[in-house]
Image: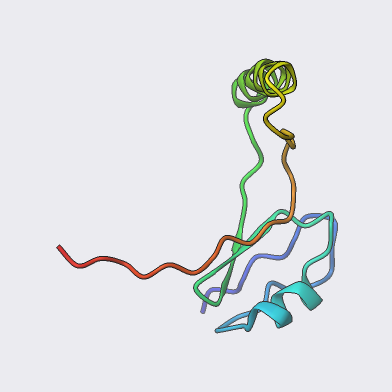
Length: 91
């Protein structure tokens, strides 16, 4: 029987089964790269060097553009956010 992976540097096991969003928030801390997707914990993979370089470049460009045009703020990941629930349209 396969076991659930554990977080790197942590003795906390990844929760199995469905979680409420509040349970996810209680389990997850600011150093854990995980998402709550339809009631389940999804661990994020580490980013590659190419990804980090490209992401850093795009962040700087967007930050200057947004600031120059007074459009708001740009926040680099990781950042905790929750998107509103939407209904899926049927084709």
